[in-house]
Amino acid sequence: MQPADIEHRFAFHAAPTQEKREEHASVRQACRRLADELNDQLPEGREKALAITKLEEVMFWANAAIARAGAENR
Image (cartoon, rainbow, N blue to C red; front, side):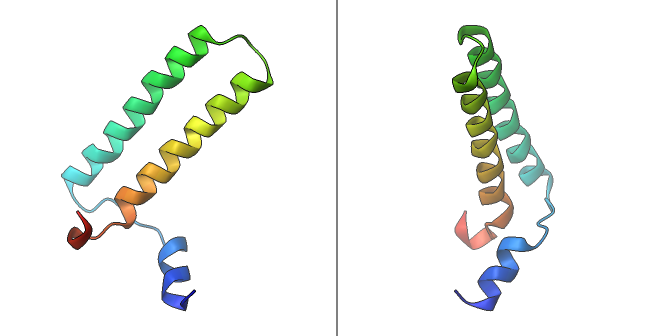
């Protein structure tokens, strides 16, 4: 892995445009809707907690994809 790759992965990527901020919000809203649905439908327990945790990971990685993508990757 190149040092520039490490730099890019661990750098802060602020949303520079309203469009990107809206994309982040859209991902968060979609994940929240699913989290609410799972919370209502699944019984309490380890599996439910893991499902919600993995959904958080989905949200984080999806938002990282948005944040890290340059205009040329869109």
